[in-house]
Length: 418
Ligand code: NAD
Image (cartoon, rainbow, N blue to C red):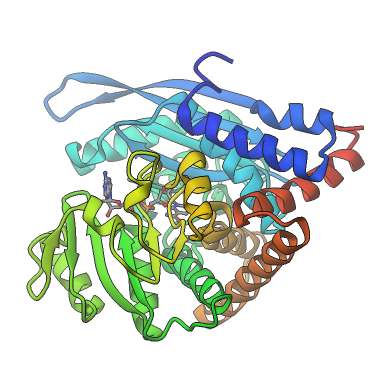
């Protein structure tokens, strides 16, 4: 479908789908159904700016599949957001939720905007208007948004409030990743990064190594990258480099991550952190480390730069950071890659915990959340690892294979594939 399924990321994901489908001999009807999202909502989001001008921003919510349960997926605010990218990410959510064995379908949303150019007032208005435009299609039993690139707990709080105003009563379960004071879960902020670290531990284990003393480079110092750095450092990992959009910092003896976090709180960027040398994002990706965790944007490791990669393990903290072609070339060079739908699943796992807690109005403490998250991440890694041995394939195909098998069974039971 023009505009929806023709972007590079969408095509990449579909290639993985077809390949994994062939590997497990996926039912043809199920395959065809999974290639096209169930529903795509395109909205105009008018915002009265502080200078009284009305500016219109394009907004999207794509609901890919709801075979396993309500649609679920984040909302992205970024200037490069477009319909096909959102559609691709919605498909990824379907496969991720299935792989993690969660009773949820896949969706994604976004607004084409640079949130750093908006005042707080403009950001709130944008969020409320976007929520109001997609309100007929979301809800605690229908479709549950969450934060993603450029959005946070405050934005989820405004979404919750707008949706609740329209429905007439408090609907805390309509979004996850909201502040704990209004029904959020303990441990949600750090969940994706912590999940990435659990997966790093398991990946290192396959090479008879532990995280303690292993060298790690992390691209992106946002919600995923920063918490990945904090948790890896806490477990004794040697985080030698981190970066953000303005560039990276490197220290071969390991960065003192709590000091980097404090520096970023004060300076809004890792740039200029004392006690480290400046490097570019490209240089960070090319470091000789045990583990490289790209936790920023998609497509950063591609056919143009894959030959520069020297890490032993790549754990995809971001969605789609390694293109399919680059992935194959890297695997052929013996680099072990853990794909996004497994590696960054911690966020949606704790989002699921949050949704469950909101339904029963009974809240867990952080230890309980971390323990339950660890169980699911370790178990999911082991399932994918075993499947990869059985089918003699890489972890990307294996993760997709596990996800597709569960989806196929559910689709057959529901009469969607035969
Ligand atoms: P974020 O906005 O909090 O952080 C993004 C980070 O990437 C920032 O440090 C930013 O400076 C950096 N960045 C932006 N453009 C860059 C560039 N061109 N080069 C290098 N760095 C750049 O976003 P996030 O929530 O941490 O999400 C990062 C990735 O993880 C995305 O692919 C997202 O879809 C994925 N993801 C996020 C979650 C979650 O819970 N937040 C869950 C699963 C997957």
